[in-house]
Image (cartoon, rainbow, N blue to C red):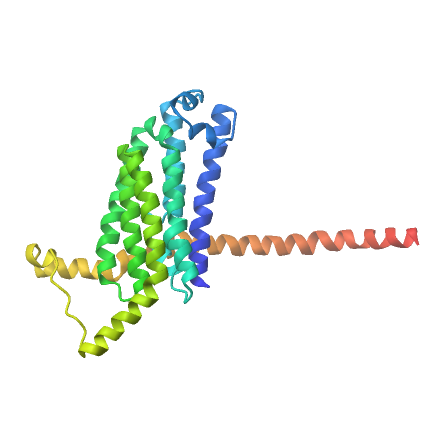
Length: 281
């Protein structure tokens, strides 16, 4: 239930950012169709957008992409959503859902070209997410979380490619990565079964090979990185405080308001409805 609330909260933030971009576009250009921003240079030039308006709309779309594709600081919802026992949730979130945001960013490339600051923001978020997920995936103890952060690493790289302007490479990377993760999530139980059989056959667990950090980083740096990765960048606590808690409080207020409206309005209408029925009889 708590993991579902995380996903719901982040998705609502993403939806709110997308709706805000459409409303601002309606105010600026007289249309709420985002498809005008997704066409070629000729179509995009028909929309009367100044540099400031283009930047604001692009930033709102980037917020929507960050929530949908689990970019920083919303990365913690993805492994939480994949903790269920069925592979269907892992397939949907790990190989399909998180690529939807990348596709949105790819479609809005003409808008990003009018907003260099937004492109820089998208590239920074993508690079930070790739580095964070690349470190975190190495210390996960279950295969779903490891694959989730490995997926985020590639998603971050795809966002960087889009920010740079490598649109064809980004599209091929997106499609190939989605198919590859789909196969990995579906075959993960069989791989684990084979691994356990190999461990039983040799009587021990294979020792991991030393990584690059073992040769270039000190013990203190490695311990610090290990702690950050083990705690998943402390994003769970941050997300709880800045997203989940305010969302829960707002939902509670709306629930009480709905209850008050039901108690105040419905009793006032019921007698008239009953009286009208008596007169008809």
